Image (cartoon, rainbow, N blue to C red; front, side):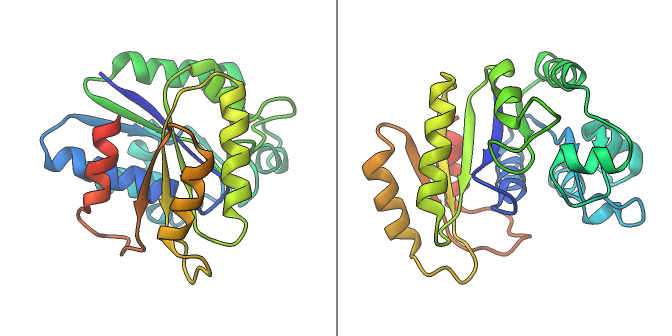
Length: 225
């Protein structure tokens, strides 16, 4: 079955929201789905329920416990920084080969759709030499790119599409997740991106409540995967 890597143009764009929405859609339609969030920063042992991994577990219908979080998110760091910086503050480092092995094991063991949520944007450093782009390049699975509608998103999105395409990675879709208090409309942002994105499908996602059960945009995206 399908394995998809969910990445974004930057931090706090909506990767977790999109991933959780897809999970809920798949479960609602009876399709088997799994998800992992291998790397997290800004993680608090005192408040694990506020983490991205917790959001994914809740969407999967699983209990939010530390063993469950550890199972889908083995690399967790306290500082809300890029993974390389956050790890360095703790005297640690992400073992890239280990990250790839963990991801490949999840891909091989999936029984339905597997969603791998990345961290930050496409070019966020994981260690001194590798970025999220390198992680995606090694896995060679299709990518969903999440973008926003904030001022600057056009340049960020087109730049991300360019660097991903240069690695010959299949970009399945761009999800334009409407930013809060955006100066540009969702429709205008999509229309402009479509002029430059070639044959890549673009799905618009209006500003929604975090706990929304489902939305037609998730069904549209699921059909592309």
